[in-house]
Length: 149
Image (tube, rainbow, N blue to C red; front, side, top):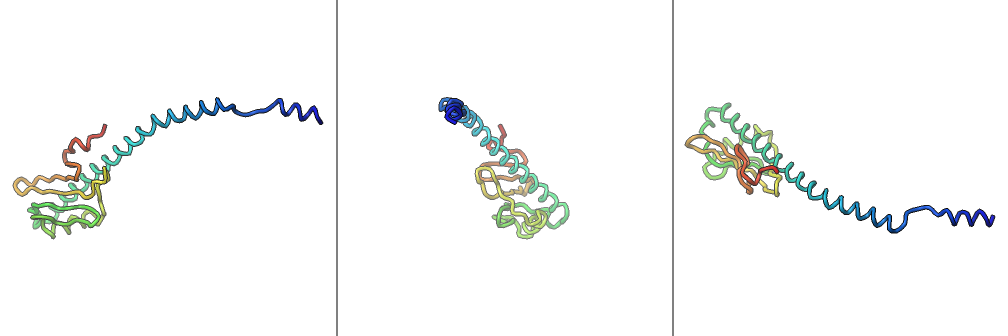
């Protein structure tokens, strides 16, 4: 019995402290490289979401104007966000309600840097439409804040 116990003492298995420290150091290096890349990917996905939502808002506004001739001249500013669509400034409530219906009453908010609401601006002279957030223009031509690197 004594020999069995002595043999077990000699056959100690496991990792040494040095081996464990090396593994932890390697994992720390990998984490230091991966975390900034993951955060960059999250920011890019939020930017992409905002650009896609802005295009949806533009398309919905164009459809509302095409469907109802009385709303074709809906120049003004409209806020699209958690409270639905609201007319601000010279915008009309009728167009805001029609746009909200066209967007299926969805609560669309800007995700990148928690920019909040989208603002749709329709120019009365040439009928151009632009969607912006507090970070800058999102559609039709995104500003440098919405460039994806």
